[in-house]
Length: 354
Image 1 (cartoon, rainbow, N blue to C red):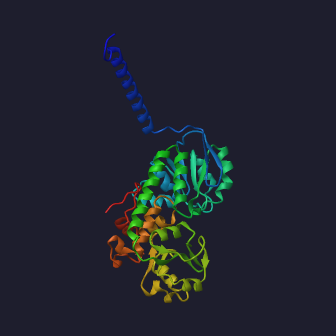
Image 2: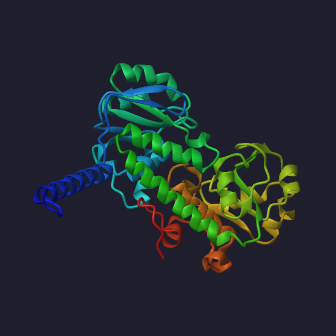
Image 3: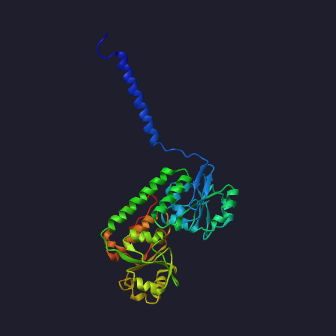
């Protein structure tokens, strides 16, 4: 009987180690390998509809700008064959060229026209449940033609969690779940950046106006109200997009008034705001804190897609410029697209620069 370890035992041990290493390597590789989606794929959209997608969509239709933001951030802009004029305008601001053969529709509220959609025949359409609310009536006709429609929460969302859910939903439907997770993560990074810069800032009261007679405001239950809070402000008006009276506005006495360019030019919009009875008594007017948003600025704040985190950054810069190394005089009373691109620097990669 020999002492020590036999040659056969050593060989066996080595072979066992090799097998274990090989299996471990395989498992690690599989864990990091993107998993291909399995179609048909069932999705429960924001409206609770069970949408079955038979195969990975080869073409995409977009009927709201928040959907456009999601699709392009997922890297699938090359599949877009139909989109709305507002999405095209936003993409142009960001330096994205829309394919010349894509169908452009100009009317999307409360529902887009059916005929151009049928002609373009995208495999999947993304729609905003809050904005395109009548579009659900056409989903049966579209399904009969082999066109699936998925509704995101969109303008019904009350906070960023709803927008995260929208991104995840669309990413799953398009078979790029991991990309959706990446977009959500980057959105969170930008919001954390904003929060970290306004942590020690004194909160200010903000009235966000979209019309003046009657007065429409964002309200603290809307996603805009949520972003105002993230930006170090407070929206004193209850609900989602309520109508308020001049008296309610005067009693709230906002420190800042931020408004859409609802009259189409700065001078006319400012004049309309200043025509509200008693407005001159508010802190906002007395301290020169009335700001009007140009198209791109308005898109970032009012369109509840991934780029809305830049809207939160823009709001924070307006309300607390010193927190971002800016002098209050560097914040123009009309926030043009040029100013936004220079200072906020929105981009489809959801990165911060400068």
